[in-house]
Image (cartoon, rainbow, N blue to C red):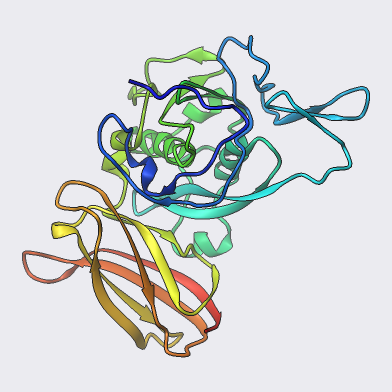
Amino acid sequence: MIPSRPPAADVTPRPTGAHLRRARRVTAVGLLAATLVLGGCGSDDGDKADSTAPGTASSTTAAGSTTTAAGGSTSSSEPASQSDVTVYFVRDEKIAATTRSVTGVGIGAAALEAVIAGPNEVESGIGFSNAVPAGTEVLGVNIADGVATVDLSAGFESGGGSLSMQLRVAQVVATLTQFDTVSSVTIRIDGKEVDGIGGEGVPATDLDRLDIEDVTPAILLLSPTPGATITSPLRISGTSNTFEATYQYEVLDENGKVIASGFDTATSGTGTRGTFEAEIDLDGHIGDTTVVLFESSAKDGSRINEVEIPIDVVGGL
């Protein structure tokens, strides 16, 4: 039931929302369109040529060439590739998405390293935090038959209660399941299989997006991300699980004045997570801008599941 293993050196981020669930459960669509190479791929027993050395994406041979995690080699003078990936932190006790630019062939491991590094100043300023303990080490990321087996240091289990454990596991699962070759994630600690994470025993084996739905916000904005610089028209995208799949949006200028508003629907809702995307005309506006998405309560019409993201608009078409 698990998809056959694709070539280890050909890993592409899913289009928006396609990683929400494995193909054997439901059909999903669109997250990212950039083509990435996910290093650190290989079998868990280390007998494959594409096995990742613990904590590294590449190693330098005596001859001065660089041996990639996928087992190939490139000239040391060749510049490392750079890719944008989605990484997940915590906001209001749910996971929240942002982007990082990572360099090298070990994209999966690099994305996790970015998670461990934590939110930047802009993200922290709007309430982003990190449930993954500082000092956690990525000891290895191996992919086989659609399962990413992640080896993390014991520090990953330190501190925090049940919710914190759920959130840090969800950060890892959400970050890695953006890639086409990853349908699910299994976490190991210091190279050892574990029944669960922390004293609460949060599941750590064969986890996909459905397993972290409880700590995924009703409206998860994937683009734009905090502090992004964009040009008009504004393009938004993400996933949601709202009543009748409907969400509303507002775009505010630096003074809080509404410069655009409306509503739209996702591909599904009312208990099933769907994807959404929209293009919003900003009518010539430039400068500091806030994107607001929310759902109107079916009970009393009040705003619920609201999310605000600050961006900078630098021009338009």
